[in-house]
Amino acid sequence: MNAFELYNPVRVFFGEGQLFHLSEQIPADARVLLTFGGGSIHRTGIYDEVRKVLGDRHVVDFGGIEPNPHYETLVQALPIIKSEGITFILAVGGGSVIDGTKFIAAAAKYEGADPWELLKNPKLAEGIGAMPFGTVLTLSATGSEMNNGAVITRAETHEKFAFHSPSTFPVFSIVDPAYTLSLPMNQVVNGVVDAFVHVMEQYMTYPADAPVQDRFAEGLLATLMDIGPKLRAYPKDLRLRDDLALCAMWALNGWIAAGVPEDWSTHLIGHELTALFGLDHGLTLAIIYPHLLKDQIEHKQAKLIQFAERVLDARTGKKAGEQSNTVTGTMLQKLLGANPDPHMLATGAAIGIETFLVMMYDGKVHLSDYGITKEQLQPIWERFEQRRWRLGENRTIDAEAVKRILLAAL
Image 1 (cartoon, rainbow, N blue to C red):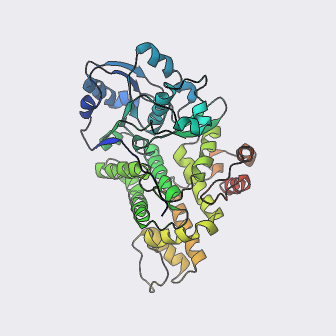
Image 2: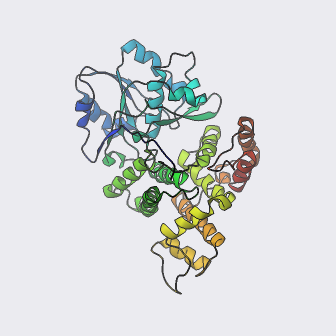
Image 3: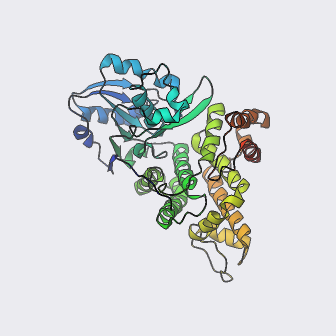
């Protein structure tokens, strides 16, 4: 295991009916900027509940933050913060609203001419201060309610970049899974897949003598693979929403990343697909991830085998007719036979992961399903070449690898 520093100061209020904590967490004399998305919180009544708990505090609304929040929208909040004397920001929404709020909070303290520099220069973002903010979560997916990261899109240039800062942790987050019950199913599916790939990007690398982190990650993965199909079948089951909310939050709060290698190449490729074509973030991950695993199978073989054995319960040495503990594991066992060699077992794990993702999106997990052609993809690997990016835990994913992965995903 590698040495690490772990810092996460977020106070989380989890469970149904926790909104009353707003009154005690936000100073009574605060001047609040209330950030939100397209208006669903008005239709569901969450907005009215929040305003009631905020009481007599001075509150200014800032709505219209897009999925994959746009820089051009977010910077419009900065003059409002100044003119209204805002002292606290409250984000009510999902990961996009919270990510956008993190950027607003940091940009409000940035003294440079162009806040986009916070996205282009990660070192600059790490050293910036930020306004205090809290969150009321309405969509479980990104884990942004319990971390300090954000991903922002610049629509003008079709660019999408991430930033992190020690100052952009929420002061608190209210996580009431009941607030997610009104979501359309495509957003729930995106949330399951986003959380699943978040865990994979920290787990599916190479063995690092980190059994605690591995077992924690494997528990999250097994839970997500179990509840994903159930959420589609029972969309109003609050217990399943509780489980998804915890998985999404713990997938990216720093705990399972402590002391282990990470990948994140699937996310960076997916960001390009979202920036250029507007595809949902979760969908881009489902499209790219199986093909990245197959392309990098030699480097990830040991962890793929571990995943097959521990999560899918598919392994060598099973007796004839012996069933695995998972449906996917049983399917793989039949496909691979009783004693698959290591490469076959690793390949089987990749197939099992792909099967799960295909099921979540009803089979539509190819770029061609969304009208995207080879010619339209070329700018992506050209960008990777221009940036000289080498991604993955072993830095084996260069522009040529990105090209192979994208073409396989067609």
